[in-house]
Image 1: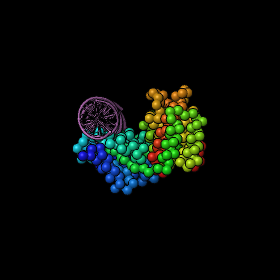
Image 2: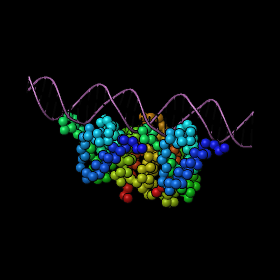
Image 3: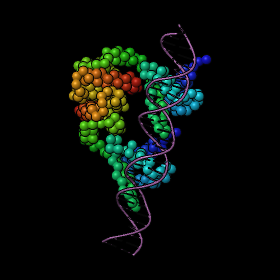
Length: 155
Length: 155
DNA sequence: CCTCTTTTGACCTTCTTTGACTAAAGTATA
DNA sequence: TATACTTTAGTCAAAGAAGGTCAAAAGAGG
């Protein structure tokens, strides 16, 4: 017998396949009901099978009218390049290296000129008013986060 | 099923879109009646979706002939608009308000969707791994810097 | 057995809805 | 004019409605 998580995974992927590229929106409680499992199992399935690395984008909202929205994004060209950059960044990043990376993103047409300027502004030591080993860590964290959204944003 | 607050928000924005820049004046009780909700729900919708950060000005009057007037703040020139945002940001900025401002920038076509996502990623508390009063200061500083480059970058 | 994955549930956070109470503005009346 | 009444809108906190987190328990495979 296949396990519940696999069944739910398959179900969600079927929804996505039917949706013709559109995001799929589900109600956590409703799906849990449908498959007779606890709601948090959906979080498990999503966390283990619908991550960024798997090529999915997941958004959600709580409260009345809440939802979980799953989008499939295909980005295999950029993916490896960006993964390499992420590795390069690691846990710390000087302003100089940050500039180089942004330059590279621009030259590879992953970002526009304006996007590059925005990113540089965010990473500038002018913005990041904290002391030095932490500043480079912070810069790395920010750029990592930015690269993720670039990766999972369709133009 | 979408929730009432979203529906009312959409309704009010449609009114504003139709009004050609003019303020829109509503009767709280009348709208509540129309959407079959309690009057104070209008206050909730306004407080969460029509704030200054969102680019709206709300005035009201009680008593006979009372009203709620919503104005979409004109963004005269880009420079003026951005200056106003900068003033609003000041020296500290919560993630929530940052989101509102980015939303406003997008709606006013000052940034693209992707640029918005990049900025949000840079301002996310996930990126800004420092403790709280400082985090809001840092977020403000970064966004201020970004706004400056937007201001001085021609499309 | 040992390890990795899955299942479960208690507890948490966020957003929305509702209603009782309050405040202000207009209107009628002494 | 001062006072009372009516008509609006505002505030705030409680209840409700989702989804999120985390760690313990259970299960599967080697």
